[in-house]
Length: 518
Image (spheres, rainbow, N blue to C red):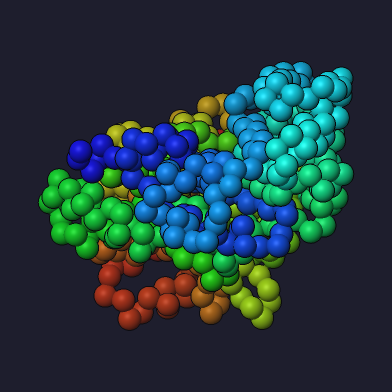
C-alpha cells in the first residue's frame, strides 16, 4: 500500500481507521493522562476540522475495551485493565438545527437505541429525565459507571448565532440536558465534551465547578493537530514525494508546508501545530492548496467585525486574557474571541507579567480565507487571482510602477456597486489593507515610527511604499504628513527605493479621488 493510500482524509472513526491500516498519529498518551486523573469532567475546545471527533472516537473504543485496535500504540503498553465500560457517545454535529424541534428528534433517536440496549423500563416524556434514567440504568445493568462523550456539544448554539429565539431555546434545552452530569454524578466514570466555544452563560460550566477545561492546558496543548516532530515522524515519505513533485529539496518542502498550514498554538508553552485536515490533503495531493477554507467560513465573523467598525490590523495583532478567550457571550460577542475560537486567530506568545496572550493569524491558508470573506464587506467584488485589475495592482507595485498601480487601484474602487458604501476613514483603511494583502503584497497598517504611525506600509524585494490615506481631505495633505513626520526615516539604512504616496478618497464619489507620488 502506498503511503498516500493511508491518509485518512475525512475519517473520524478510530475503529475504521485502524482496521484499514490508515495513518494514525498516536495521541493515546493523552488518554493515559485522562484516565489517571482524578477529574470526572473534561472539556476541550478546538477549531473545526482539527481532530476533536477522532480523539473522542478513540476514547470511545478505549473505554469499550477494544484493545486490538490499540496494538502498537502508547496506551497498549500501560497497566490499563481493558475492562469495558458502558459508553454513551452523543454526536451533535449531525444536523444544522435550523428549527427548534430538530434537537428533540436527534436525541429521541439516540435515546431509543440506548433504552433498548440497556433495557430501560421507565421511559419519561422529558428528554432530560430520559437521559438521567439511561445513565442510571446503564450503570446498574453493567455494574460499571458510565462514560459520556459528547462531540460538538455546542453545535445547536453555533448554528443559531443570528437567531435569538432559536439560540435561547437551545441554550435552555442543552442546559437541562447537561445538568444530569451533576445530578447523576454517582453513576458517571467520565464526561468528555468537545466544541468550538465555551459559552459563558450555559449552565453546564457554572453547575460543574470542577470541570477540567483543558483547552489552554500546557499538558494537553498537542492533543489535536500535528506537531513539527510528528510531521517528520509520520509524513517523511509524503514530504519527499511532495518535494520531488515541486522540484525543491526536503527542507524547502517542510518550510512551504509550515508557511501554509502550521502556526497554531493552544497554550502558554504549546508547540506550533499544523492543521491536520489541510496537511493530510496536501500530502495526499502533493500540492499546496487552501483546503481548510473550502470547508466553510462563518460569515458571522465578518458581520461582527463590520458592526463594530474594527481596525482590522489591530484585531489581527491583538492582546487578550485567557478568561476573555474562554468565555463567549453571544448577546455581546467579542470579535477577537470569535476569531480565536473559530481558528482565524491563534496564540503567538504569552506575557507572564501582564497575563495576556498575543494573538495573530496562524498561517497563509487562514489569512487568505479570512481576507476573502471580509473583502465583500468593504468593497463589492472579491479580487480573485486572475482578475485583471488586481493583477495590474500587484504587478506594478512589484515592478516599481506606483502610478500604474494607483490607476488600477482607482479603477478597482470605481467598480464598487452603488449599494455598497465605504462610509468612514476606518472602512477605507480596512478595504485598502485587505485588498493589498489578498493580492499577495506584504502589507502593514498603522506601522509605528518615532513620530507617528504610517497608514499603509508595503514592502517588496526591491521597493518600499509609504502610503498615507485621507478621507475627504487632499492627497497633498496626505503627502505633507509623510514628510513632516519623516516616516521614511525608519528605512534610511535600507537599500531599496522608497516611494511616498498620498491618497485621497472622496465620500461623495465613493472612489479614490487623487494621489501624489514622491
